[in-house]
Length: 216
Image (cartoon, rainbow, N blue to C red; front, side, top):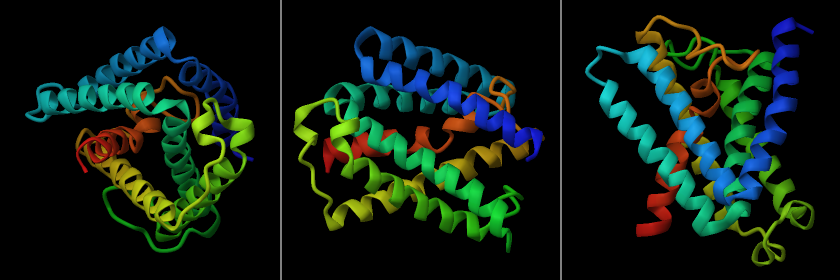
């Protein structure tokens, strides 16, 4: 196993419990978590895009995204917020695993490592992870209203839509990294790169989800 993959696995084993703690605890803990992520992401964006015309729009978008994450967690609860995170994380994981295993045709020059097999893997693993999460809510659930939840046909359309937005978000951040001639947005996370490298899909999913929940 390559050292980079080992670093990725080990850092994930540390980061996932920390993120779960703040999301589940909510209140001041989640607010603190969101602020730290926003500041770290904004710093990475500044390093990427300082003196560029799109610097300030990017900062405003990050503010919108993290505000949406805060509102979704506090209005709709930890369960719903975690479901969104599960879809995004396993979309990214599916793309990475399937892309490495099956390789195949490249998706776009914007992100040379992205493949069509990775796209399919992202969709597939997000559906599997979401289904497992829902069917084991007695283990993962933190509020009673979700414990008797049953999967519906529309859920799978929602999963695919969120997975698609997450993958497009990944490509958008890859585009700006390419313009800045950098591989990663930072080196804070061993094996992962920067904060933005890991949440690039999530920051696009949460504001769209919040707008959909609020106005549609």
